[in-house]
Length: 184
Image 1 (spheres, one colour):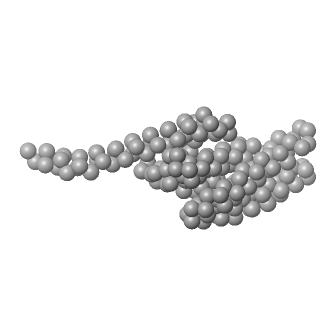
Image 2 (tube, rainbow, N blue to C red):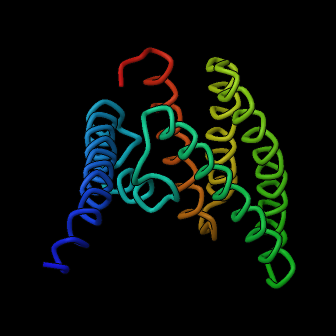
Image 3 (cartoon, helix red, strand yellow):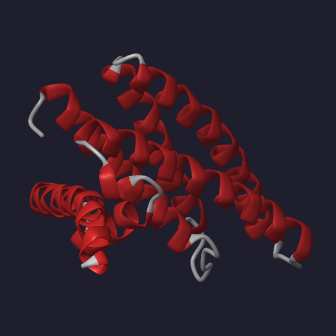
């Protein structure tokens, strides 16, 4: 009998917790499915994997997904900026590649400030202003990658990172739009 007395209070805690996790997972899956069907820049697997891996995503709302997506952009941009610094310091690069890396470092430094502004605007419900800031981050990742493509035979050491930033910004823009229009 005593083993059942522990089961009931414990189950009263666990069952609502599991329901909340399931609802958040459903929110992420359905949101990413919609985004990937309506935006060619968003890959469903990338979207779900990114959002599900983020702290707090297992019990979030649509508004919370907006904050999470912006935090993911911020963390990724900050990490990429540090990675570029590391490449510049440690690598023996062709002068053209070194110049591209320097340009990308500037773009990602600007992007860090833009994401910080976007987060403030999002929290203040100024979605159009947040959109402008995140769009500039998206443009920065594209500009960085395009710089390497200007010279034939040059391979960007940042392709994967630029693609990740691009996709994360696309997700953030889509979530912000969903929050702004109340379609979520």
